[in-house]
Length: 388
Image (cartoon, rainbow, N blue to C red; front, side, top):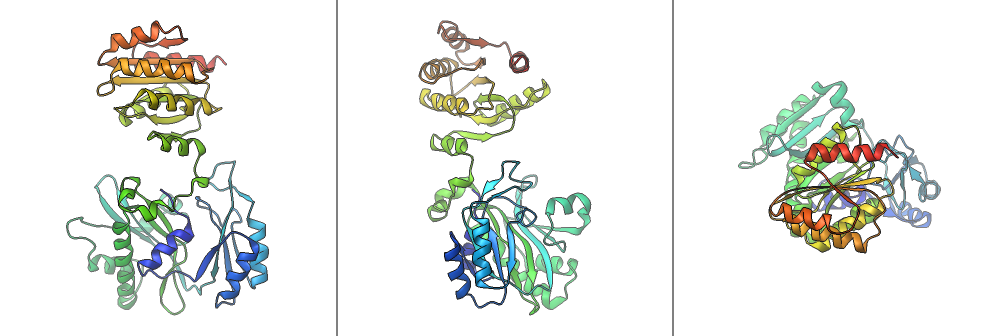
């Protein structure tokens, strides 16, 4: 679950990580009042959307007075920002963060995330702060320094000192960076985050480190331990179909293709999408109904697939294990009768009670095509889509 910058900074402050003074505003009048309460000579107004690249898209404005804060806020709220992470449709700005501007001596990048290959957290640091870290990694990977955290012993002070020296700091500043890192790692572990990123982390003229930006992504699997954080979810920033799927415990991610996929099991879902791409088309979604899907879940999955106007045809790929093929087939037939299905459907079934499942589908009177294997299924669905 992604958080807004203002939400992340509120959490940062609870963990004693310094951030600029500021607050969120939903209108120009509110922004004006916040600015008047700040002890500042310059102000920053930042659009709050779940996407990077806001500055390049005009979503970050530096102004000189509370009145200019109001004007900038009114210009941003209601505007659609288009960045490299939003897609061409962009995202509408509904709120802004108003902050006191900071004195900047140096900008850095700092992040803590999970290294999936080594199954442990990794700290990433770079002197190229304020730039997109992906571009730094692509153009100058040697400028990104890393320290992996052993889960058994945790973050060690010498790791912070190593990073400080690599960034060019003396012993005094390296010790300050180490203290800052210790708090950031504790936050990362304490809230069950999958990503904590500060870009830029600034070194002020007073030689203090401040999180000028804050990005925090929480592991959905840990939210049960943090009901207060779960309440911070902003569904207006999420795809409506993904929000609907989450209500029914369906693992759904919308993609850019036109072939809808309904699969049981994440691995099989990935393989299905690979087969579709290998056959020359693009999947419209990742949809895992799970091993124990009920007929009701299948119906809800159908409804979500049919709600996507980009879907031209649907491929159902099921391996019957915990979810038996006859149960899935019954669910599909019932769902097709309740949900208006106006697009071709290819079904591939294998596993427990596969013959019973195929019989249910063939005798349903509905227009299903039953495929013989994954290759046959992907080729049939791609052929149908390309015929439109």
